[in-house]
Image (cartoon, rainbow, N blue to C red; front, side, top):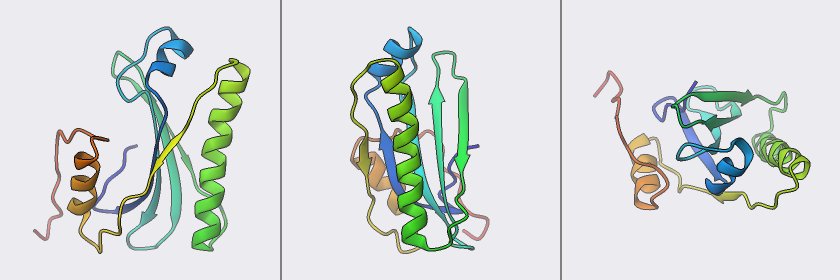
Length: 135
């Protein structure tokens, strides 16, 4: 599971300090925990995905899909759930942390605008771009 910007619009990108990964696991990869709140470009369904990335490159993904259909309520429910997951882990480990949330501007249907924005903010490193078949 990943995030495909051609099929899903990014509404929110969430991160924690990568140094916490080393505290939690003894070692961690770059971009240890990342979360994405997404909108399906066709159905407009709002979902959340988060993942942990380990030094060996292994990633564990989880998807959250609330039954709420109201766009704003679904967004808030997902953000709350993602924060609750991290709060629970960090409280159990007696660690303090801060989740940073980034909200890209509306891409108006052009996924490359979001990718460019993320890269300009130094939030991602683009390693591959898959263009839609219609291009």
